[in-house]
Length: 171
Image: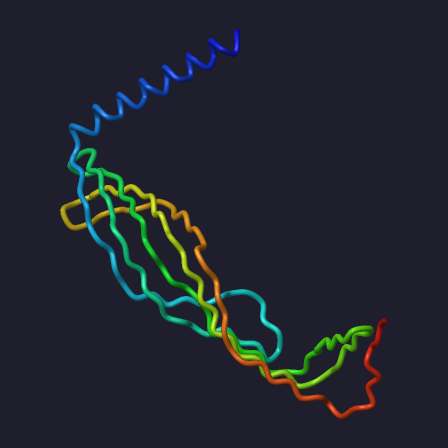
């Protein structure tokens, strides 16, 4: 088939689908709401000796939308601003790299690192619900999360180890 005909057929099909959806939405109930709350987050994964990840609190807040298809079934979504992060600590032996104009030196020492990591997201939850009874609801779906910003602040203390260690030097 000609590419031009395919483009027109595609446009007609999309318009029919949108028109059908709009007609169906007119017969359904549309509800608006608001979600706000407190959240606790931490990073998970393998840790080194002397490394810890602790919970950090944040908020989530934003508008929600519900589309009731039948008395027992519907869809829910929203745009939620959320904060997640981590309180990261590391205390153990580690290496530091010192660079000057013409050389680089890698040195062993005691490391004490504390970081407060803050991530900000815009979440778009998409889900469906079904009422089994007046008081029991099944809900399922997924969440699209878009990272808006990521910052970290903290301290790093390094103390040279007094050993017979010849640091690795390069030029």
